Image (cartoon, rainbow, N blue to C red; front, side, top):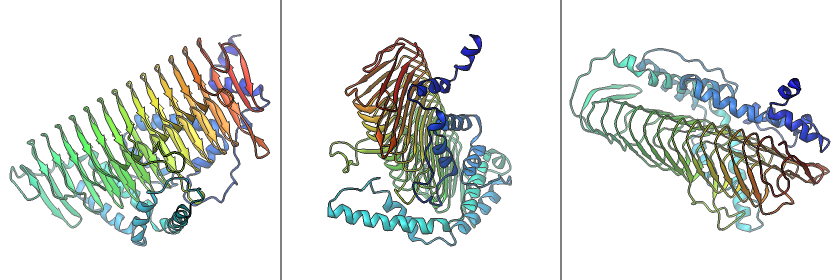
Amino acid sequence: MIVVLLIIQSWTAYLDTSLQYIGLNQADLTFRNDYTVRDPYRFAIVDSLLSHPINASTFVTTLDSIFWNCSENYLIPHLCSWYGLRIRMKKTNFEEVCAHAAQDIVHAFSETPSELGDVVEELTTFSPDLTTSIDEDKARERHQDSLVQYMKENAATVDYERLFQAGVNLLFAATHYEVWLNDISLQGPYRMPGVEGTILYSANYEWGDIVIGDTGANHYTQEFTVVIDLGGDDVYSCKEPDMISIIIDKAGDDQYIGGDHTIGAGVWAVSIVIDEQGDDSYKAGSYSLGCGVFGIGILIDKTGNDTYFGDTFTQGAGGFGIGVLKDGTGNDVYEGALYAQGFASTYGIGILGDETGNDMFIIREKYIDEIRYLDHYLSLSQGFAMGFRPDLSAGIGMLLDRAGNDYYLGDIFAQGSSYWYGIGGIVESGGNDTYVAYQYAQGAGTHITIGVLVDKAGNDNYVSKGVSQGCGHDLALGMLLDHAGDDSYVAFDLSQGAGNANGIGILIDEKGDDSYSVKRSHNTQGYGNFRREYGSVGVLIDIRGDDIYRNGENSCVWTSGKYGVGMDYE
């Protein structure tokens, strides 16, 4: 008896037992890799997880552990390894790092056509699916196809190794700036153009300029390559310079105000913002707040109750580059509109990580989802990855929250979901959390991709309409794994462990007294249909607790169709 109990402690063992009721085992849960020609920008880990989709939860939780347990300096080289690049930190003094980085960035784009930037921004105005019969939309679809083809042919002209090497070296220099600061002689206080307030040091170099502000309240209005501010309630309202931008603020309740391409915007560049203390406000437009597009964008806020406001491609977003927003302590508010809060497009990695506090992650209603609804809005955010079907794969988009009672609000495509050969995920490590979305959300994969939501602890609430809560649609995996807590799941249809169009949908709740509510019982709570001459798989498993279902009950097994199963192990 003891041996048996030890064997079945892992939820994967319970999955094995459940699959036996529909004549399957874990080896049957896989997808072929020959549905389409592999584009050159797909991450190898995506192919690996599509072959072994049950490993997806291990992948996202391992990434979560790496993110929180290693410094930013070692995180970025690790992310670069998924590109197949081996990036090493070259430890020299601050000025030399900046000089070498400028040379690397120039070299990285020496063969790249300038039109590529315009193509990137135009592509991000498109919905992820254009399949209507309206002539205008057909013309728009043809235009999108031409843009995608241009991207496919020209994005490889970037030397990503030199570009990312510059980013890694600059981040190391920025996080060790005090070593350089101790070696220079401060000159101030005095005033200079572009700064309202007083500074202690300034210097001009071939690659840019450095300004060191004093502990008073300063307002920076001019583009400086490097700003180091020693304290005070400061305002940053300047545009970012080309190639390199570094802002380090040691203390104070600061305001960062900008439009598009500002505040940690690594767009054809490397941009780093590090704020060490204070209740800070970040307000920008699109391509901002830890955004990497053909570059690396990093925003790190270590303490304080902070607010982040952006529009599109923001708050930890990457496409052909790496974007990271990392927040330490405090009760924070994040608000975006599209491609935000841990988002990845093609060849991109986007991560939003929040360590502690009761936080709000809001995607506001701005961009109408014309393809599906006229009264709902595209989110494409909150641990979401999107490719351009069928030519360009998605990247890796993650939202990682370590503690606190958090609130997530999205609409269409959000909260640990993905579209077309990518990985989208949320890992929530603690707190009583609430997830609200409408469709394609909360552990949902659509069209040959991986979407995962892992919540490790707390009494959580999940609310959606459909294609959510562990739903895989069209040769994709959607997984929701909740480890502990008294949880509530509310959906309308095609959710709570549902596989559709040869997808795999899995919802597993390990501990707690849980409630599963649905409107339609025929395609929820362990549902799999038969399509294209083989099956879709849907699995709902609840391992412990006194639970309430629409389709099943405690201590029983139920099936739906040929490959749908629900099982309560109490």
